[in-house]
Image (cartoon, rainbow, N blue to C red; front, side, top):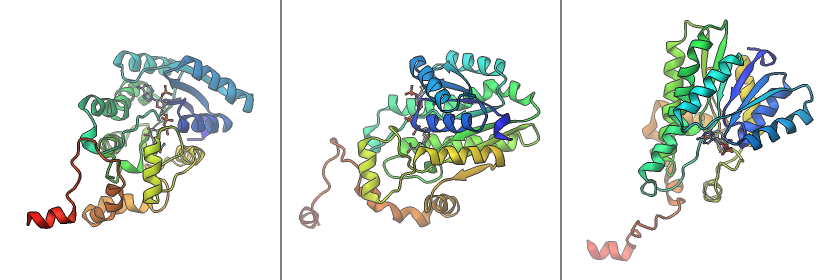
Length: 278
Ligand SMILES: NC(=O)c1ccc[n+]([C@@H]2O[C@H](COP(=O)([O-])OP(=O)(O)OC[C@H]3O[C@@H](n4cnc5c(N)ncnc54)[C@H](OP(=O)(O)O)[C@@H]3O)[C@@H](O)[C@H]2O)c1
């Protein structure tokens, strides 16, 4: 779809990637409904974008994606606003040894990153299917295709999101609705804690600016590419991991060694202790 004809509902609009996407969409002539949790930050962002692009067509709406009623209210509002594209950009991070993550946190990550986009898509489908053309773009991650030590819960959510996007794309293939998945690599936003930055540095992981993700997303809207991963070697690793994951199992020792230590985890035995035990 031509970006200038899109009417985009953008979740996570106040986030680092969301801000870059909203600005790029507005600059390209799209109409954007910015959705986020803070009315003050949403209205401030609309003013900022409008200063840069005075003719920008922007609106905003508060949403709490952890609440079903709030998702339903957003879907109704977006349908009445005549949205023809959803960009699911809201998400939460989770990093560290798996045994650090409590079940409440696991549930929150899976809800925000996976269940909420599924619920919002489902609520909007009757409206989208009635349009001559509509698109749903899931902002996932390369970690929706590569299981990385330290990101087991986050990977579970993004692998799930990619599976959802792929299955729904095939299910809706004969309808007017296209479903797409964008997998950025690590991106310079507040999403990444200092611990993730240390891990990235220790493992030589590159980070993109959020504008790079926005540029790819606008390109995907125009080209309607089904699935795209960003960055080299990440995009090759994502494809290879899909074909022969066992080949990559040995490639992440440095990543495992670079994880923050769990306070509950006993230190690994020293070589001396190991040889005494033999
Ligand atoms: N940054 C990266 O390294 C990276 C890499 C690959 C993929 N991604 C994906 O890209 C997307 C955007 O990431 P980002 O870097 O822009 O992160 P970010 O700066 O932390 O922004 C995340 C956004 O999600 C919103 N959000 C979180 N929980 C929500 C909830 N319960 N209800 C409503 N909104 C909620 C936040 O709202 P508030 O503003 O109200 O907090 C925020 O606007 C995420 O899906 C992430 O998984 C990020």
